[in-house]
Image 1 (cartoon, helix red, strand yellow):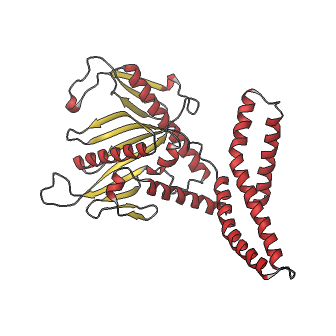
Image 2 (tube, rainbow, N blue to C red):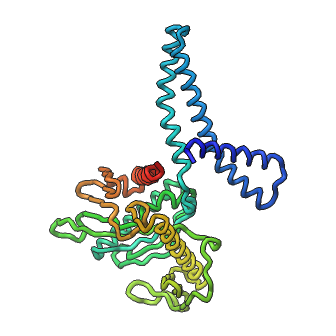
Image 3 (cartoon, rainbow, N blue to C red):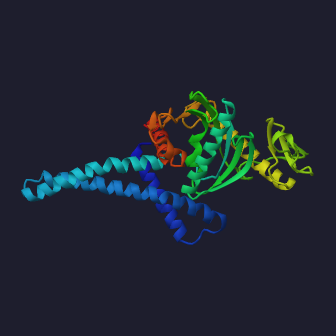
Amino acid sequence: MSFDDRLEMLVRRHDELRDMLGAGKIAGSDFAKYSKEYSDLTPLVETIQTYQQAQRSLEDTKALMSDPSCDQEMKSMAEEEMHELQHKLPELMRAMQLALLPKDAADEKNAIMELRAGTGGDEAALFATDLFRMYQKYAQLQNWRFEVISISENGVGGYKDATIEITGKGVFAKLKFESGVHRVQRVPATETQGRIHTSAATVAVLPEAEEVDIKIEDKDLRIDVFRSSGPGGQSVNTTDSAVRIVHLPTGLIVQQQDEKSQHKNKAKALKVLRARLYEAEREKLANERAGMRKEQVGSGDRSERIRTYNFPQGRVTDHRINVTLYKIDDVMNGNISELVDALIADDQAKQLAELN
């Protein structure tokens, strides 16, 4: 099927849905399903129609310019319009191509973010805390809700690991490329010789899964309860409120102890477990579709070093797209939209290249 044939098919389907819904003969779940399909198609069809109208206008303009009876003033106006249309058509074509790209079903979902200190000891934990605050500020700028599920501190103000639930519009679509190893180069506060140290922290961004996405059977779980403890192992609770869940088929383990209620800890642990299982299934399907070919952007491979934050030079470099920003203070204050947008654009360009 040619590209033009595919466009015509989409326009016909949009017209068919409009007529079906307008007839008032669809009800219940079918009405909701067809209404969503119609709503999703509408902006694409409007772009298609704008593109087709621009094509017709370009043909009419060219015909006018080649008409010997057309006076010079009219030809000048037609030539100006022709240049505008020739500039506009590629933009409309790209908008259509982007709209036709396969949608990631998880893009509109909320996200579970997991931060872990990597190599570098206390400095790595302090850097994990800095990343936590960076994403917290970015979430505020996006009007998202940023809720801590669990945090484990190292005793000097750093986070050994932290798990956060981020909710809002298009959260996963914007944060999914943050998964990977983030490296920092700076002079730690404890360094007396002024030497630059390199440390790292790992970020994992998982789409939050609903029960309808991932069904977890009770028989597949082993749930242990125990007393929660604070830094250094000191007891912070006199009841068995902490929860450890083992998913027997996969061996995944999730532990939660931040809440005083065993019920709340279990609910949070199940939320994280469900997100991890959902992401594992997504990765499996993606690998199958790609013939086991892994790409650095979009693979979610947490072993990849994706970004370096160099404080002495004031720069942040994303190694996947070779983008360097000399505004590290802005970035650490949550202004990461420039990086996020560049990563999304790069991913779209790769998908378009595969279609062509």
